[in-house]
Image (cartoon, rainbow, N blue to C red; front, top):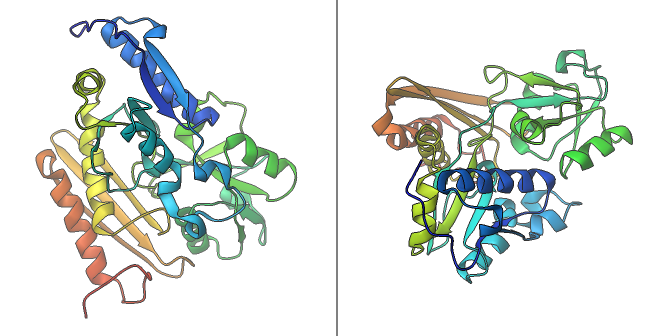
Length: 318
């Protein structure tokens, strides 16, 4: 049990998006803080903030601004003092922080794997040639196009409930979700097949919850330190350094996964052409204290091997 902080005069305001998954993550954060400091539920207030990414569902993210669409309004409210901390799905987070904010608290990481979802519970291998698969993730679409170029890929956005309704309406025969989200929502009824990371490397930071705060907020800093998961911190330091060195966002097909093996951290990285026609991979292991440095090095090797036209955003020196 950590040192008990006095119950704040005003509740600690926890900012979050309003989807069922985002709320589940906010409730988990609140529960961990309550347990760490023996505080009652009314010592906290969940503040729902609707983001541009939640409002605009009929266009691909790359057309309306990328990953920041899920965080910008939340961060603006935190800088304005309307909330004290913000709970994020880390795979949605840009690698650069707004000035005045820090993202240095991570909860224990959930299942990192992708889930292949069909109404009948079939596997990817079972899917007939020409079937329609829906996904908003460029990474998943590129990986699928590489493995199954015979399939038809369509844009598919929305929360778990929305995507399942689209399957029921026949918009697509299958889609992908994150195992972490299904687990956190306790949605055991959703028919899914977990895809091993060896077969489909996940998005950077998939399965991890991050908690953001103002850099000058000492109360939030002390409270969040008590619930930070060190192992997740090492893994995210490596993965996000790798992503930053690739100038990555949700607009680019990038996959990466860091795993701990004793005092060693191992990173596997993958970049793809958006149409899946070419895939480059790399891997490296290093001591935990060199996690971020290794992430940068793996990214640099991938950049050096990629043709100039591999990605429009990839600026490989001549």
